[in-house]
Every structure is written in structure tokens, then in C-alpha cells.
Image 1 (cartoon, rainbow, N blue to C red):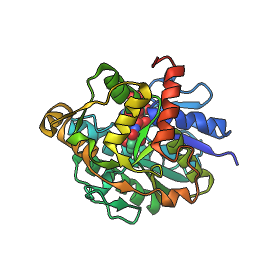
Image 2 (image 1 turned 135 degrees about the vertical axis):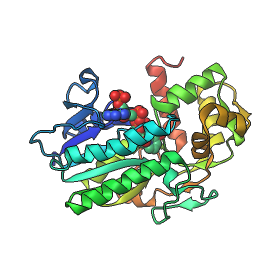
Image 3 (image 1 turned 120 degrees about the vertical axis):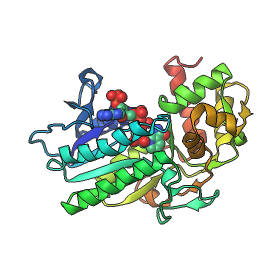
Length: 302
Ligand SMILES: NC(=O)c1ccc[n+]([C@@H]2O[C@H](COP(=O)([O-])OP(=O)(O)OC[C@H]3O[C@@H](n4cnc5c(N)ncnc54)[C@H](OP(=O)(O)O)[C@@H]3O)[C@@H](O)[C@H]2O)c1
């Protein structure tokens, strides 16, 4: 059944694919964008910044996918606070009369340092970085405010989302090609990864199967060390494995929060979402192969 959807962050790495795939499935999509021209041509467009009041008129949405945010690459706490927390609160005020449900997209940092253990949705939240504390405060605000007025609320906790674009292309592959990529702690920590097609597929499944009052971890079926993920990517490109960098140096360049998020070891489980969604790329091996092929087709790689 066709649904009416609002996507915030519609121009981002994940949002772009989400809009495309929702349109492909014949849903009615509105993109919230800051620059009109950046929206998908087949989606409706609302131009606005989540930090300002946005007028959605009379239009009614079945669901708002809230993806607009700054990433942990942003080191200024003030900006993270303004956009990721205050912006989320403002967005809620703007859209609360216009939607039946809100699906908030977050990460796995909410579980904090679990010492390499297997983690599922029953684990308590225990954020240990400023970035994640702010994001969790936004999540809890949205959840409480939504429930108070009868709006359904769901959360997807994504692992590291890779694919053509985003950090995988612009940070990892680009630096591997220039031989400037280095791994803190030798990449010896487990992480959950998910191909962007599966990240988006899970979000659409949550909508279509009416799983809009739940919390899901969204990762593939094979948690792996960061080192194995990176080295496999290098193998698929046909270049040598990268070296390591001391943690203090990595922190000086990228910031303590980002390095903590990056090097926390965890084996997240996709058991709950897998009961509803079949992954196209159950392990990073198929997903990286597909991504490298896509990057070659786009002439980003030889
Ligand atoms: N990528 C990952 O590995 C990953 C993992 C876990 C969770 N997530 C979460 O998934 C969501 C999407 O991630 P992504 O990788 O697609 O991020 P992204 O590529 O950095 O995109 C961010 C989006 O947010 C928009 N935005 C930023 N500030 C805004 C504002 N003040 N008002 C309106 N829009 C604003 C940007 O719009 P402009 O184009 O106008 O700048 C852009 O569309 C984020 O919430 C992120 O935390 C991502």
C-alpha cells in the first residue's frame, strides 16, 4: 500500500538511497532539503532547515524518517548540540500535527564500550561520547514527545553503513588509493557493518510491516574486525594493506570522540530485524564486492 513519507537528510549518503528506493516502491515521498535543486526530481520538496520552523501545510505523512544530522566528524559540540538536539526538537514542533509516526535513525554508539561482547536490542544504553549522548537525548525527547500525543515512534540503530558514497568512498577508498589510510589499534576491534541497500531496505520494511513502535539494530550477519574489513577492501581494489597509527596521533587528527566510536569493539546481532527483512548482503564480503563494482562502473576506480 502506498504511504506518504517525509525524509529529512534526503540529500545525504543514506537519505538519497532511501528516497530513490521509496519512490521505486511507489510511495509518495517528500524530501526535506536545504537547497531546492538538491532534491530527487521525482519527490515532492519542502525547503527548510531543521533549526527553523518549517511549514508542512496540510499534508499528512504516514511516517517521518529523521536522518538529518551532523556526523561524528563534526568536532564542535555547539554545532552538534544545535543541529542534532535542538534541530530535532524544532523539527518535532514543525511536524507533530502532520505525521502518524516517526522513525529515528541512530548508531550503535548508544551501547557504549561493551568490551567486544555480542549485543542485541535488550542491552541498556550506556553512551560514553559527547556525540552519542547528544543523539540519545534527541532520541529520548522524540520518543517521549511522540508518545504523549499518540505518534508512533521507532528507532533504527545502524552499524557502519558502507556503499558507493559516504565515508566508505570518500574516506576509506580515497585514502587507501593515496596510501594515507592508517588504522588505530591495528584495526583489532569488532564492528557491525551494513551495506547501504540493506540499511535502507530495513527502514522500508519497518514502514511496510508496520514495525513503527520498535527498536532495531541494523547490521549484517557477520560482525568482523575493522582490520579484516579494511584489508578485504584493499584486496578487492588490488592495493596493499594499510599500516597502523598510534591512538594518540589518530585522536589529535580526528578527535577523541570519533576514535572512541571507531575503536569500540562490539559484535552486534541482527536477529531481530532478520525476522522481518532478508539481507541482500549478509556479509561485508558480498557487499564490498558489489560496492567496488559500482565504483568501477562510476569510473571512481579503475
Ligand atoms: N553513515 C553511517 O555509517 C551511519 C551510521 C549510523 C547512523 N547514521 C545516521 O544516519 C543518518 C544519515 O547519515 P548519512 O551518512 O546519510 O549522513 P550525511 O551524508 O552526512 O547526510 C546528512 C544529511 O543531513 C542534512 N542536514 C544536516 N544539517 C541539517 C539541517 N540543519 N537542516 C536540514 N538538514 C540538515 C544534510 O543536508 P545538506 O545536504 O543540506 O547538508 C544531509 O542531507 C544520520 O543521522 C547518521 O547519524 C549513519
